[in-house]
Length: 317
Image 1 (cartoon, rainbow, N blue to C red):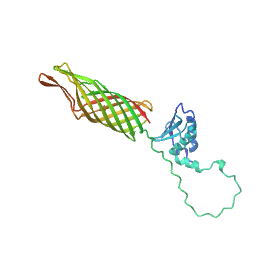
Image 2: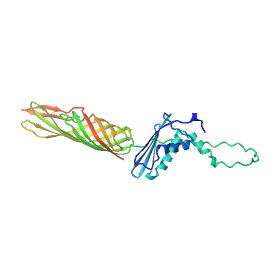
Image 3: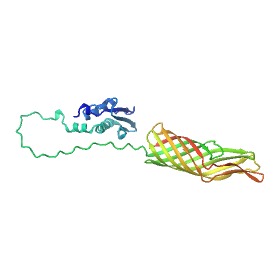
Image 4: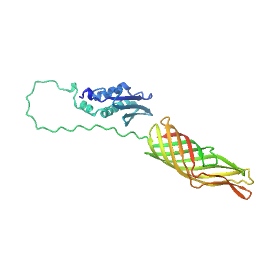
């Protein structure tokens, strides 16, 4: 058995969902770990940080164990949480001090020791045998994957340079996550906005659809960070007012550009997101008003625009 100076020291953060009533409390879990190590490793300020969390999800209980950045997730029926906690205590003990767990496994308890007998004749020494190597310590597996599933989004937009004036818009979309990447489809409508000069007034709005492939360098239960490429195709409808002849016109709307977005999850399923797009116009639109026989330009679409967005996000596993 290792001396007290050689014992591992661990700071424990233990949480249990109110719905996980079959799970043991913190004191019981500490005892389960100590029983496997032969000593209590938990102190107020330890060299290692261990967090344990039990949560009820439907008919099962999910247990998560994180030791200094390495995470393990186990699941069990809702009524078997104590057995789940026993397994997690063994995993925690092996990760904290594998030598102590081996020593406890290889050393028989006093009840298992045979009763003392009369000394037997000492047999001739057998040839020395090489001891079997001890079993390797069980490593903690990689952190649980939070990256799968479907994301739905509904948001408000503020476009600049895409339509004559920043009047706002709406966007709705869905994306499928595969590992650290996703592919999404969106539809957007930019509200009618107008620009005028001495010859009259023009108004325009945009209806478009977009394809959005993204990479997610940070994707967890709390945060989602995205870097995307956005390709949009649609129509820009324009009309004129206070002119001798006004006819509605429809022009091609096509843009491509980058997007940076972040989502803060308020719960496991709902979050709030913010995004910034920098669309590059592939087919610039120029709106003119004919003054007499001479056309006068009232507004021209910017070569590079900006679209800011705030959205409500739902994640479906």
